[in-house]
Image 1 (cartoon, rainbow, N blue to C red):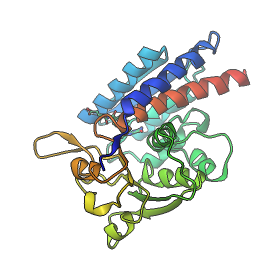
Image 2 (tube, protein in one colour):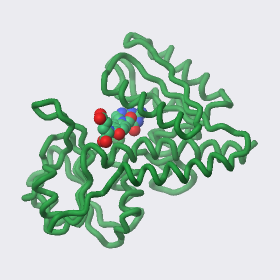
Image 3 (cartoon, helix red, strand yellow):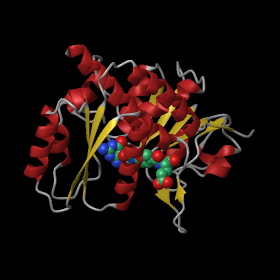
Length: 283
Ligand SMILES: Nc1nc2c(c(=O)[nH]1)N[C@@H](CN(C=O)c1ccc(C(=O)N[C@@H](CCC(=O)O)C(=O)O)cc1)CN2
């Protein structure tokens, strides 16, 4: 078997076209996104400029707030408070990771849930479990859209999520559960990872370990979703799954790059447009 390649760029593009129509229907309201970038982390700078470019292409107003690595937590919190009050801004995100002296939880909790387009605030995290109006984290929600686009029905399927981060692993499991999948979480301390992943209809690899998942870890016909963003010894971007060996055994697989990554940014645009729509209804 050779797997179908799930083309994240193509799905992202089709979703972005739909978003253009929603923006046109906003009648005079321009969705606004504020991105706070702290320090000089090269990867963060790349992701932030990709976000800004994507906003520009769609007609979303984007404001970049750059702060030095040495910024104090209280200055950062004051900036967030100003953005919370700014009616031209519908979405706020602080690019992660943060410098060690800043408490991530305090920063995330300072953003009002209605503008938390990353979906990291405890109110949004809680509503993912209990229901109600919420924003869902962009990477796992993007994966759900990819699975839907591919026509993969999740009801009764066994999904194994490898990784337990707040950004990807934990919300990924919740979203899969919402669609009636049977979910197993694995992580760095899981004994005999292979015994779990081999039973899975869908494996989501989000552990940040290059080549953690090989053909030996999956069953014939499994769907492999690769969230990894690692660099190999030559500096080439690669995922958590050994692409060539898994491709030969899986029924569908996401590449890195060009798989989950483009969907992460698209879901940020999606949440920002959604937020602008919600605010314009409140007015
Ligand atoms: N506040 C947030 N911080 C971070 C998030 C997040 O969702 N919110 N996620 C990651 C980084 N990230 C977005 O911020 C992100 C990572 C990767 C991509 C992407 O499109 N990758 C491309 C390859 C890009 C390259 O060449 O380097 C791909 O996979 O095709 C988009 C967004 C951590 N921080």
